[in-house]
Length: 102
Image (tube, rainbow, N blue to C red; front, top):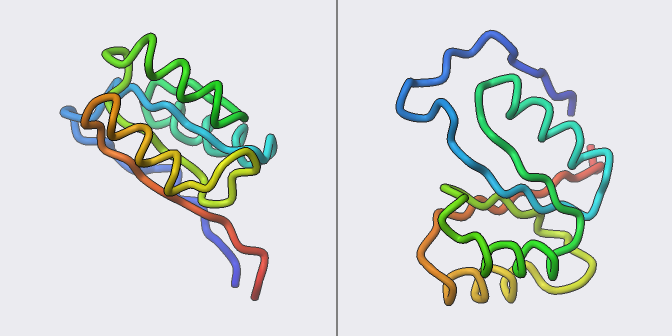
């Protein structure tokens, strides 16, 4: 299955500048997603390690509006990460994964 990247999407004004903490152990995926989000007016903090992301959230919780996490993290199960995040403070969480299966 091929994926088409849509680049000419208007972001609603309410979402311009949304601060996203992006967590993904795959550096290529992390870089690609961060670039796409930044091109659409989002402010992205990209982190490879889940434990570092949790530490950043604990120290700077008010600096993020949304957390986007990969389901295939290496350090911990993504559900464990989500539960830990919810204990810090309610934040919207998007859980994503990329599959190479056709």
